Image (cartoon, rainbow, N blue to C red):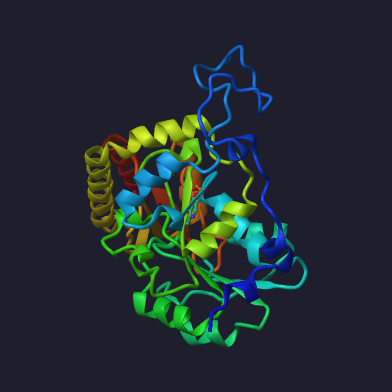
Amino acid sequence: MFDLQSIVRENVWRMKPYASARDEFKGTASVYLDANENNLGSLAGENYNRYPDPHQKVLKSKIAGIKGVKQSQIFLGNGSDEAIDLLFRMVCRPGLDRMLHLPPTYGMYEVSANLNDVQLDAIQLTPDFQLPVAEVLRNVKNTTKIIFICSPNNPTGNSINPESIETILDNFDGLVVLDEAYIDFSETPSWTTRLAEYPNLVVLQTFSKAWGMAGLRLGMAFASEEIIAILDKIKPPYNINEATQELALKALDQDEQLKYMVEEIVQERQMLEAALPTLPIVEKVYPSDANFILVKVKDANALYTYLLDKGIVTRNRSTLAGCERCLRISIGTTEENQQLYQAISEFSN
Ligand SMILES: Cc1ncc(COP(=O)(O)O)c(C=O)c1O
């Protein structure tokens, strides 16, 4: 049975959060002399002399409406990378505890584990990039605190079978962190709808992909109120800056534009998925539910360099086990995708 207190680090469970000036005084006043701000103004623009809302209340209430979850079930991070790091710090005792992840996958789980001195168990995804469920469960130890599952997975692009995720959630008493950075490009429903069923589930999403806000750094974690309360307790108080909060609020009003961009990107992906396999150098385009494709070619290094010479940068993933001879290619604008296709076909000839 999942018991949050038994997996949260004791020091984290006991600690009190930093009490910011904005926490201690919550009303409105005419003169603010409580936070050592510059009351003369800001060189960056109106409002930026003030610390931002540490609880991001307005933004969270808007996100809650859009995502169909309670405000108290949302954590906002400086990118989802911040949420990944805080999840380690919340449950993993440095030098003692472990996490399990499933390569080839997003590299930050490993980097963050290493930074936090957390032992790593890496279980390779199956050849079609699915979860080897029995092997995962066999490798869980009593110090394993987190299993990271990325769906749609980076860099492979595919979604992970929901039944497999369910089995892990049902049979593992630590946190199952489901990274849905690319969910907006997928037809698969988000696991945010299943939070009530699984107290050990944490869903990560981000504004960096479909919303086009990678430069602002805004990521989301959705989980039980209890888990979110701990993440909020341990985060740096002002982790989401004022500009990001304001711009994200504006972006959230543009759901039609979001839909349009996602449809456009998915259409362009489908175009490349159909066109690239006709080229002799391309061995396989893996099915993708994301805004990128993984392409297996005859000589990945040669194609990568050729594309670079043409001014086109892709991600050479050929050194990753399971991704031999593969390039990961983000979906660009129509013109960029045409340039890419043209360049690969020239290389093919
Ligand atoms: C699977 C996955 N998770 C998280 C992230 C990072 O997201 P953020 O920009 O919100 O830190 C990425 C970025 O590439 C990603 O591929």
